[in-house]
Amino acid sequence: SQQGEEDPQALSIQEGENATMNCSYKTSINNLQWYRQNSGRGLVHLILIRSNEREKHSGRLRVTLDTSKKSSSLLITASRAADTASYFCATDLSGNQFYFGTGTSLTVIP
Amino acid sequence: EAGVAQSPRYKIIEKRQSVAFWCNPISGHATLYWYQQILGQGPKLLIQFQNNGVVDDSQLPKDRFSAERLKGVDSTLKIQPAKLEDSAVYLCASSTGSNTQYFGPGTRLTVL
Image 1: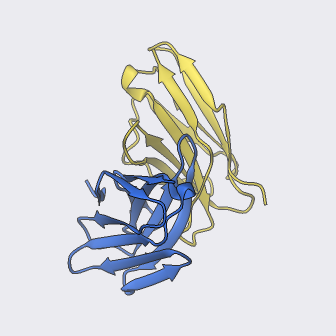
Image 2: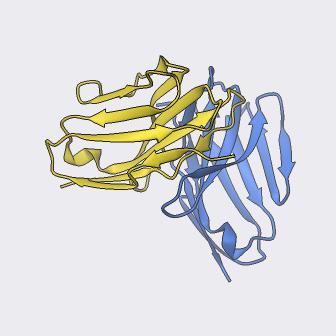
């Protein structure tokens, strides 16, 4: 399976702390994306990092990509209760065909 | 800009019955995806359309699942007959080909 694997499966932190979640994948990619899914809702695109990029920032989000290790990390700084959600990485192998990981469930405690 | 629309939002059926889901993508989005998301897992791509042509349906269980996008706009996904293991959320997404997918709210299917 080309599906990625997120780690940890679940994460619980206090509001204001940073949250880090990781994604590992198996094959070469064009790009990697992170999505957020609130309970019972659809997925929302957060950030895209291309295979020739190593780090990208968007607001409180920081994404890194290490193609040699086939891994990516998502850092959410100064977390808020509203960040409580499941986070998925999605790898684009080619032709805009996406394979999602298993997700990290983040709980931010007020 | 209106988002991706899906209906129904919820559906409960008996096993061996048939069910159909509808998706209307964002206007102008040529690419449309159907995903199956089983509880506790990530979305699994079932089928990808580019306009009204199929790009990838390698993970679609073709003995019971079918999908069409006849006019290159809205799409339907059908399951016939349904099995217990088909219980999941069925997500539709669309994109312009710029890599960012926009997801609808999903249809939660329960097969009893």
